[in-house]
Image (cartoon, rainbow, N blue to C red):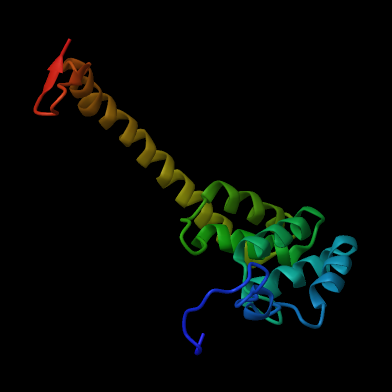
Length: 168
């Protein structure tokens, strides 16, 4: 502090972390929104949107996905459409997941949603492309990497001075 360094008693405190970190929900909105979301799928979708946008709550995309999935599993059409679009385009550092996108968009398209039916075609095409890529990748790995790693001997130990590697 400004008085400099000095010996202090062990019960003195100079930093109180509870005052340094602000309360993320001072009005207590999260508890009431969570209570409503547990009983109503529309409220769960709304809570997911609030977490996604940071609207009145601290932005948390993983909580947003959790609440949107909950709403979608309970039959909310808007949540199913939003989840399908999120999984089709990817979210933050995760890439697109065409299997999940196809799952959610097919649920929404089965309820005669035209936009979801169009996006479902994109998800199916993306899934087919991903499967073709994985097939080519598996073939490439079996032709090039597998023989390389298994034709050489790599079992051994370092010498005590770590100057060279001695094979068995």
